[in-house]
Structure formats: structure tokens, C-alpha cells
Image (cartoon, rainbow, N blue to C red):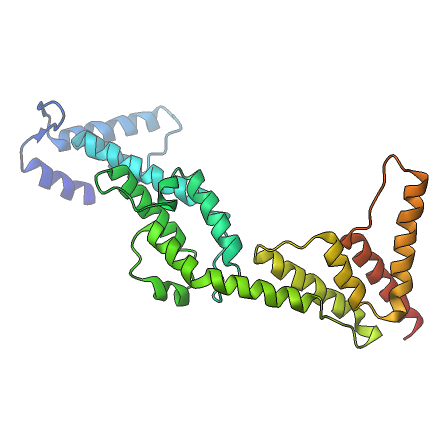
Length: 280
């Protein structure tokens, strides 16, 4: 039904003018009938062809308006490429707590999508490719913003302008969050030996929050926070772990090892489990 309607509209002009070479072509209905006949013939010959309506529409458009169709396909390809590069970028947190890592991922995605110009300026209105690329990039960024955040930046209609607005609003908050979170890490303490595992959970979660904020603390500082939060009942586990590493390094000076936060956390969790079994 849709094909007949389209054909009747087009055939009312009797023939179609090819925009590229000024040659008159046969009426659209004649063209489309040939395509249908070709498809039926292939089916009769058991050829594995499953033409889609979209494919047929593209063929028809390409016949009628070659230049416009190529432009539309290129724009679609651009949209798909941008979508792929943004696929692994995390959603922006409503409170802006992951701004640093979000900003870093966005920057990498924009570069991968060949839109580096958008990191330093708005698109040149004369360059249509830049304008279209910028629209695709902005759309990808906006799709990662919660509604509450997006409402604050509704009027930011260029990628560079949007990035600068996000930076101005959330970068300062991110710096303050890092300071508060890092201070909290070194203030964690265990008030009940039986619940030491909960303390270890809090330590790891706080460390992960710092990572999300884009702030890395070295292993020595992380271990210091763990040791500080460990109650006396489990201090012997820390001593044993440290002594084991020291002994190994004396025997193997060529390939020394070091105590890592992961090793220490694992030993403490195992020690806590045994402690609770022996002290129900």
C-alpha cells in the first residue's frame, strides 16, 4: 500500500530528473516493478535473499536522489561510529561524584570519534562535517546525563559549551569530594571484632569511591589505612604477613616481593572468619 502511494505521487511527474547528470529516467513504478520481479525470480530460483523494506527504500531513494542518499548514509554511519565510541562511557552520577572519570572517558571517546575539535572550540559553521559531528557528540553526551543534571544545561547546544559548563559546575565539587573521602578512609575504625569484615568492606568501598573520583592513592598509604583500622585481635595477622614477605625476600633477593593491599585484605578476612568460628 505504501509503495503504491509513493509511486503514484512520483509518477504524477511522469518521469524523474536525475539531479547529477540531467538525464530523464523511466517512471518510478516501472523501476520498482522491475525490482519486485527480480526479487520474485531470485526466490523462485531458491536464492537466499531476504530483502528488507529498509533496503528497498534505500534502493529507491538512491535511484531518485543519488547525492542526497549518499549524504544521508554518511550521516548515519557517523552516528553509528559515535555511538560505538561512547558505548563504554559510564553514566554521569546525579550528584556528580564520578565527574573526573566521566570527563576522562568522554575526552577519550571524543578523540576516538575523530571530534577533537570539540574539546577546544565550537564547530566552524562553514564546515558542515564539523557541525554534524558536533551534533552527534552532543547527543551522545546528553544521553549519559540524568534528567536532573540535564535540566541544568538545557541551553548548552554545542559540545564544547556543554563540557565547559559541566567542568565549571562539578570540577570544584569533585576536588572537595576527594579531600573528604580520603580523610574518611584514614578515620575508619572497627568497634566490634565480630564485625571486622564490615570494616574491611567500608575500607574497600571508600577506596573504590576515590578511584571513581579519579584520585589514586599509593599502596603504602592504602595499607596504612588498613593497619590503622585493624583491631588488636587481628594485629598478629599483619605481623605474620609482613614477616612472611621479609623472610621470602631474604631467601630470594634477586626477585623480591612486596606486601600488597589485596594480600593483606585477604589474610585479614581469612583470619576474621577463623576468629568467629573459634569465638561464636
